[in-house]
Length: 121
Image: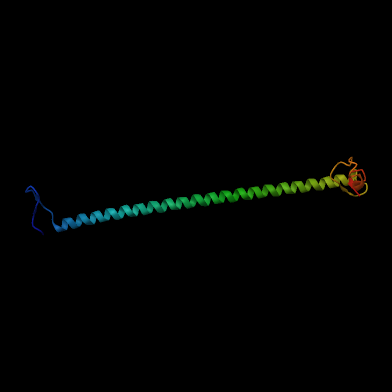
């Protein structure tokens, strides 16, 4: 043990080297705990951000899949409608089996192509 130190003003201060070392250890320990807590907090924040990003990506993928499915359904419906129109056109007014030409057949300009009936011969 060290002898008693005198402070300014003549007041005795009992401070041993062991007490000083214990205070230093406690200070270091608190600093380490603080740094560890900061690291943990940062890691948790990073994990949360990563989870949010993954969720956003999953949502975007789901939206894209839904859009693709809707487009496919629309295409299928259009194809079915076209097939129905072709079948109806062939049964009702398509005597010569030609394809329907754009336009209604009353243009004199395309009458040579469609024979005036709206169908390509």
